[in-house]
Length: 152
Image (cartoon, rainbow, N blue to C red; front, side, top):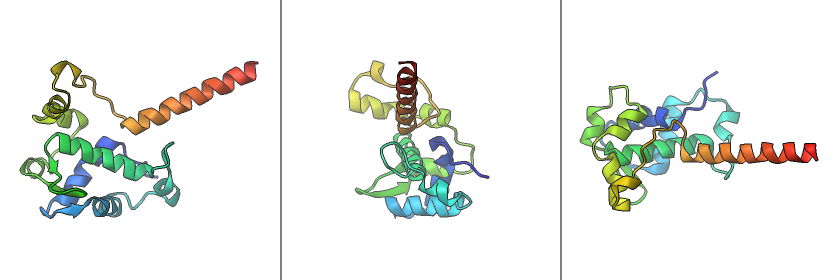
């Protein structure tokens, strides 16, 4: 059985869906990525939700899209719309890892523009999306509370 992809595993599928250079609505992008690359996921997997109630597969594709934008591989020409860039086209047939995207020119400049401080740019490469980290934190707290209740 195929597993739900990690957010960085959606990079190439996102770029492949945008390969023709067309500008797509974000919802249409999610739908096409799922149809073309993750149609083998079970109904339960496709309906699995994050702790905040978002659909997990869409959440992961959204984080992949966000990282690709920060790296300059895609752009948002208008609100709710997405399009591949020349950089994205140039990398579409490569194995594009999280490290590649985070080390690409433009990625940390994105954070520097937001924060205006080089020291505040993230330095650690993590294979989990922020939502995955939040969900893991909730699970850990829940386990601790259950253990404490059982001990008391």
